[in-house]
Length: 251
Ligand code: 6PG
Image 1 (cartoon, rainbow, N blue to C red):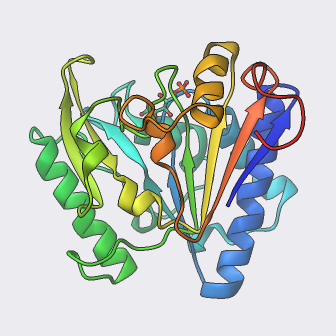
Image 2 (tube, rainbow, N blue to C red):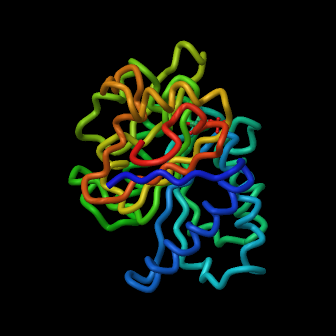
């Protein structure tokens, strides 16, 4: 199931996404005793993380029942300015004093990104008590963004992980970026119960229209690979990003 929610600006997207996460988290904790979330990297979710770090003032949530994961990571140490873990740790996790055993970061510092991917699959299998070579576990919520080239997580156009059908996490070298990336793959992303795609800014309006209304070309537009099996995919857009979409009705 796919839905699109539009907000006047990026602050509106950030506030709504923070509120939404708390609601999904409460339901998961009530139903299963814990909430497993995969955080997104990039700049778009940072304001949402800041708002969530103030959540104890505006929402009741058992934060010690939240298991934090990442959808992708750059091949850098956790204290590096490009680290997705580092960004979330400073904007959210440290402020909420999340117990370290609830934080499951990707080991971006490992010299071999393939090994980092395999180690993260083992960590997922451990926390979800799932067979490491079986079906991917089911996240309660996966947060993602989209780049101006239509990539999501670290699933870049024409890159090797796009065709992955078995592994949950893979590491790969992105020659164009001159860096390695470790990313969750379509099989695990599409098993999630809830997926939120936060997209803001005019620089993404064109590719967003193509991804939502254009022909299916996932090699060129990897965000089109997000088709949850049984879950819900919600695009959360600001007016600038949604500028080239039909004003109302199904987009
Ligand atoms: C990353 C992200 C990536 C990001 C998009 C959008 O590690 O960079 O996982 O997929 O979501 O590149 O980035 P912005 O939010 O900075 O536009």
